[in-house]
Image (tube, rainbow, N blue to C red):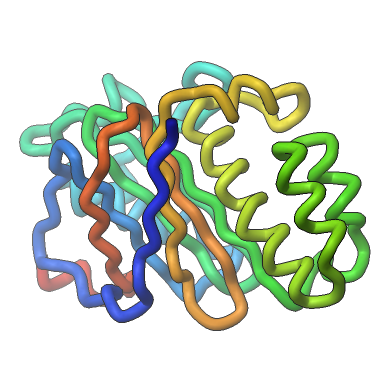
Length: 216
């Protein structure tokens, strides 16, 4: 069975000067940046854990095309076995970092982007659990959209954690032993994180700012 937790928005805080990836701990970073700056944020965050400058980091594709740090997950002094994942929607970007356990994260804007242009029930029937599709059928409007996005972010976070494509991944994503948590991403967005293994993790949620790296 997959565990599910909810992280309160009140837990978001300023990051410490020198974060370290810890076993059993998942760090989620939130930045008010869009797709144009998402990579900048990702490299900056990873630089803090690997004790390298962002320009020195190389990201490559691993199994299933999942991004990873080149060189055994960036095995720099003090870095440990750093794993990561990134997601962005509109002007919110999230980066998840873990040690030794694959991780996936997904964030979706609620009221913009594809809102009103997708059939949530049809997608749920194809990709999600049957019970979820039935529940969505009994809803409409914003209630249906929010419920759909809560289920979708959990599903996509699992898919990204496993490093598999969305198409045809339903059975494997639902049956895998993953710990999943909903993350309160802020007003107007819904997010979730998934981690390899069923053991409960500690979630640390930090606000990202490029300027704060100077204090590490």
